[in-house]
Length: 141
Image (cartoon, rainbow, N blue to C red; front, side, top):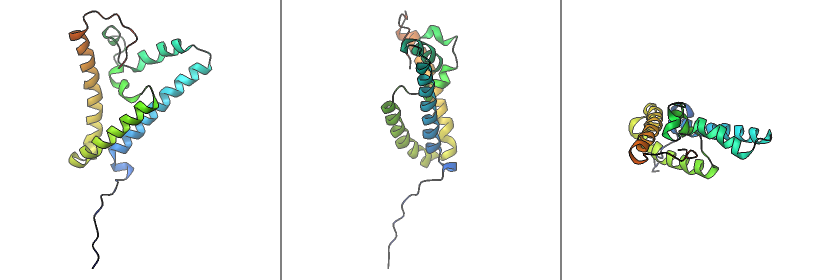
């Protein structure tokens, strides 16, 4: 008599929200750095590239937020460096698989997106509480 151990199988891409989020985040990482590389190849300085890209995708100081409100949704899809992205994807996989097993794959993407949005809002609100005078313009979340 053979005993078969039941190993959980990895869900197909269509029903695997964790894998979809990892791929979407990887696409955001590649697109952001491709834009950065293209600007650098067009002989723009690193400072110019920084001042063009980061304020348009990263959540910045509270004075910028009213002009660039979309950054609340975009900051979570781009990462500054490969290892930052890689470790975030490991954490996403570890927690995402658990949440996907508990709640199902359909609830994970809305939870992830709402976490990004509420995290950005909390970052902006914390500036009103902790930073009364914002003199730093190069800080992005």
